[in-house]
Amino acid sequence: MVITSTDIAGLKKFRTGKVRDVYDLGEELLIVATDRLSAFDVVMPTGIPDKGRVLTQISLFWFGLTKDVVENHLITADTGEIIKKLASLGVPDVESLRATLDGRSMIVKKTEPFPVECVVRGYLSGSAWKEYKAQATSNGKVNLYGIELPSNLVESDKLPEPIFTPATKAESGHDINITQAQAADMIGKDAADTLHDKTLGIYRRASQYASSRGIIIADTKFEFGRMADKIIVIDEVLTPDSSRFWDVATYKPGGAQPSFDKQYVRDWLDSIKFNREYPGPELPEEVVRNTSGKYREAYRRIVGKDL
Image (cartoon, rainbow, N blue to C red; front, side, top):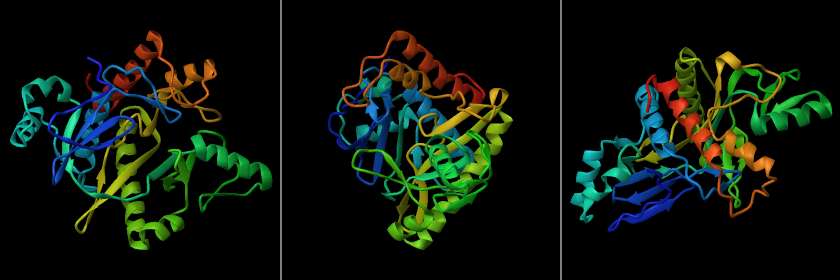
């Protein structure tokens, strides 16, 4: 069953994201990860089988592995408990929702999200590589988002140390990379320092584990929220949508690396010269199948069992 949208009678939609439908439960939120896929900031009309379940189950795994590093927003992902909660709120015919919610939903704490995406990079790739290359070409010195780096790195090189490169969202939905000093101007120095430390702490713990599974976490991004006097990690954590996962066995610096994510979709869209504007095209069966396989493979490699 491919789920590209949800509509739960009796519940108020809190937010509809590119992938997740979020419902307001009062003091808590219900997050349902659909099978929608966004590429180049455009949500495709074709869903990817099991994608939402992979995102939810991988996040749950990482929540468990990193909970001693930083508290997270998870209350429960047990479908039975979620059904009971919805029934208590007067949602009609809740049992009919079980197939929709199973494996792809969780009830979480409601927080005040920070307007900063907390990006950590252990390897030089993506927008960071483009910025690095532009600077290195012009003057041989590289200051990447306020961080000095050696000037002789190549694409996909491992950085001397993981770096914290926060970002904000523009009106168009594209990420805008900023320095930590700029983040501090937005949210305060103490909060920015805390996000820096928590981001690097999660990344180091996760990278060490992933390495034992033959996976490189090249970069990833987290979101944090404030709840009373606590800062906790929210949303998804270390999924193929929010991270670049590379295979240790095929890793070779000097160019782009194959990744466990929606690369098949991006490559196909480039091949048809997609203009990166709505509406997106329907995806061919082969692209859907290969992409779904990559998501499931990411889960298997990281968690150690099939979905």
